[in-house]
Length: 564
Image (cartoon, rainbow, N blue to C red):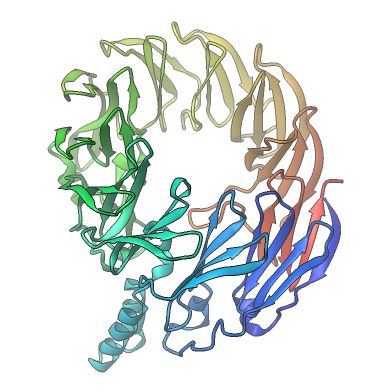
């Protein structure tokens, strides 16, 4: 890609170099650098359009944190889609604040210094106590710090509610609704305890369904104390009802003592609330009464035996179709793993309609979809997919040919066909018989093992370790391809024909990893428009919403790259 311009950053002190966020507006008109020294915005032509000092940003910072390496995490931003604005959560000082930064006006619109959420004071106290009790010097200090790191869980405390022009925030005072207009607290509910696992807004009743879990700062390995589900009036913040759920939402992550919330599958469906953790729980939206719950009797055993694996969290979420809930279940829990079965329940009553025999041992179901009269499932590390009669649960057909790792991407329903993709093959199937209509082999076409797969209209797009290809969806023929040095994930623009191929982010990465290679392709003809190679020296990277420009911060200079 071509470097269009470069612009030296204005605020360039040591604090700025350590702690800089680079953001881009929804329309891509400007890129903004936010640092302790100030806010600087640069438009698409490379012109600096705003500079705003922030002299008081660190005026009361104290030397009680773990050091510079942690300071870079003590200011966290949550982007407000469609608003060209950011919420800034700052506890780099002993005081803490929440601010709204307007990226259009390039100004701080409001600051609220009264929201207490970071637990920084408790961390400082715990650190001082560990030293005072001679609990091992730096080891004890680090242990106290790792227990209470707000930057790990700020995102779990907040929920943007554009319908109310506000955001819900779990603070030390309870669950609070904060206005995005001026930062004032509209209401506070002190009955909601623990951390915020999920918050759903029901516009018809103007109410919120809030589900909690343990605060990350206080979580203990293998235990969960807070299991609360509440319905809250969105206008007043008053509790309409409160109940306790039964499942265990927490999961073990890599690292000693690090637990976090599972991806919470919680839905509002026809006056009901469905929670899916290790088991399914269904509640009445109006009263909060539990209508029914599944159980295997082995959930606690599985958590105790294999907390690092948490195999059930890998399974496909339940599929609900015509008032039937289909879900994965495990049986025969033992040292060697679990048996995998499928079940179907009446959504209203919880009546078990059918259950399959064992489908596999330790091979999680990776995807499920309903098409016509069949429930179609794929399994990880299995060469085949299965079709079951969705009413009776009897096997209708099975199809192999996806390689030892099995189907690796979500299956797609398109023009009366099913498209299923492994690492090398995309197979088009007749949903009634499982008959193969055609097969795409990315390796034989020079694209390599697949890293992503997508469908748009009459075209199938595949990116692999060696290239990018466009296929005819009707017959699977290759219509165009281009050789690439690396693969990645595809992003399709809604306003033009651009396809951006970005590096696959690791668990802790942002959406766009900083140092990997990027490729821009015209999907109308498969032509490579440009490549931005790998570079370990980048400090930040942002992509315009239409994928036409890439902004890079390196060596304290902002550069914009565009297609050749």
